[in-house]
Length: 506
Image 1 (cartoon, one colour):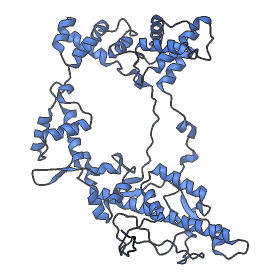
Image 2 (cartoon, one colour):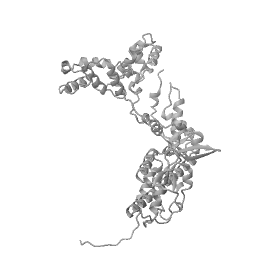
Image 3 (cartoon, rainbow, N blue to C red):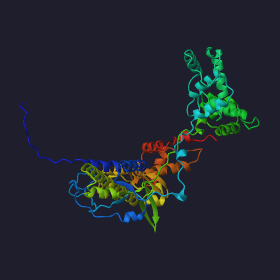
Image 4 (cartoon, helix red, strand yellow):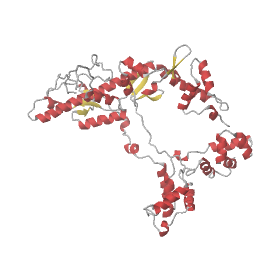
């Protein structure tokens, strides 16, 4: 084969850097957007934060079609890159607003600023809590080494997950290298003697007296016994509860085998119920009482209110400051001053063009987010009025067709964006759900079906829970055709156990 040159004519959609920036801003969450704006303010001298409304009113001026370095000003920014519709671009303004708000100015109630140290400080973990108590205990240097290894083997639920034999073997292996001792503990000659299983178990018993109660148990039975032993001996049904809280009896209790329980323990029905009531007051996961995770704060992007009988969606103005072009640098870039050399002027013009693209991208993001949010509110008015049971079926294609955008654009704008409504705060994707058919030929939202299942389970008699098959029959009577396996799938997605596990023994 010989190399040859060929000419081909074709059309190709090119994603410019400006369009890439607009798409990236569109899919950022509110916190990520604030960080992006802060980075832009620090890197681009042409951008500045507007402090008052007067600067915004006086900042609007008509811009020429080309900058002085000959590069064209940005005119069209087609956010919907997937549609490829170049003949009908979005309706951009013909003139630039030097001040384009990415939201209202940041407000501060009563002049109080948030406690950043409290927000960013590391939360206390269960390990930290136990280590602090170990430091306050009169442990010797040798016992302190054992305590540290035991505490490291306790999981977040408060259970000891490593056998004592394994902990003892690990201590002897590390101790042989003289690296297992705590640097803050006094080192004696006896600290280098081999560790015995009995002394490891003795230190475990000391740790099991730490807070929270029940910490360091090796299984559920031991955890419950640790909590029962600290109760007042005069507590009613305490002895019966101790007999019930064994591994074998708890297995029978989990299987709802009350007949064998009463036979083996020689309890009557009343004694068994009183013992079970006492055990239900205990904490099967004592470690969960020490919160080791930091609370996640959600700031809504859209706020929905009912004004004069109509639902209205507005952008939350607390996310980012108002931005504007720095007039001094802009005049330096446009004026032919002799004090400004060519390199400086070229740099300023480049930064000016980038600042305008950034402001335009922010405006496009807010416009797209508001347009999609208004359409969602319009489609889900029944949910806002009556709750989840009135949720209408909605898919991305429905909104994309209504706002004349591609589904990928709708997916970007609804990811990690939240809406504050009188019924709570929800991610925009919450309002999208599949549908099932009804008897009259209509459709019902999957979210509404989940809400109905939850309502039926909450109202069922505890002694005779409703099965999935009966739930399907109840919904069929209401005109909703749902198969039993679909009910089971929705029930499991809400972490609701099956009917045989929901049956109460007392």
